[in-house]
Length: 324
Ligand code: GTR
Image 1 (tube, rainbow, N blue to C red):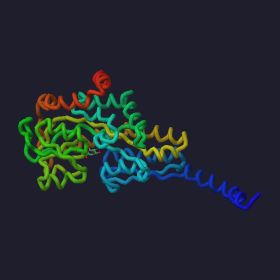
Image 2 (cartoon, protein in one colour):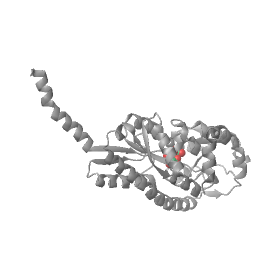
Image 3 (cartoon, protein in one colour):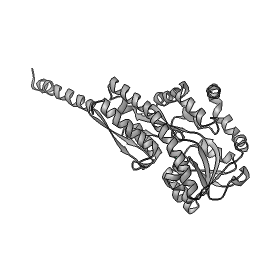
Image 4 (cartoon, rainbow, N blue to C red):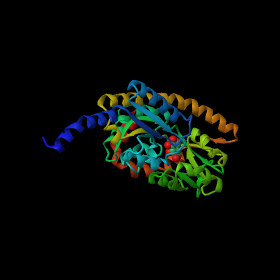
């Protein structure tokens, strides 16, 4: 046997050992735009602990909350290359990357919050997660988190569609949302979550749209005191894992990750309901006026968006509507 061959054989057990070790012990970074204590953050931390216990410490998790690893868009890019292993991201952000998920991003596609929950808990929810997994974007869709109901908040009150005319409204970086607000007579302006506070403060925008926990925890309420209950979006938010990471897991580890991600879906829902209620109370205490509006004009004005973006998903939309 020549020297080179001998060396190779000698190195083999070591190579196996190293790859075995990499599989046995892996630390996963979870990125979150929301601050510590937010329902999505807590639910993913709980999930991480359960997975760690179930894998005997083979998989460990480190939560990076508060957007320290970048904006959602940047994090999605990092997940695709495996630099960040896991994240919970708004479907709004994911839409331009995996267009098939945009069906949930259409204004007023769900009747109400409960309808959205039934849809994501059922087969359609799984189909959309599978679309993420089967796309070319190197992510595996694991489960859903609740992002509540998104309403409009503005510096000047919006009591009817007329009041919204010409207002600059911040939306997530998804052309569908820009078009939605343009259809409502406003100007949709895309920017990252972290830029909203100062954009409201300096008047770069006249308003934004989000759920009560985000309005509260990201301090948007300090410069937008009117909350108009349009309920135009009820967005579920997937937990995704990098495909590069997923492929390194053993089938057993994959099953464990899936199982506890699904559990996190329901853990977060409970936390979400509590947080929404306390957030609403705190916003009111801070002087935010909650404005009830007739949603019909908002629904009617956004019909062209549903027609344009919904056309390729006509059957799916019928199935969503049929979910009782
Ligand atoms: C929140 C959502 C975030 C982010 C944010 C935004 O409701 O949970 O993922 O998308 O809205 O509008 O930027």
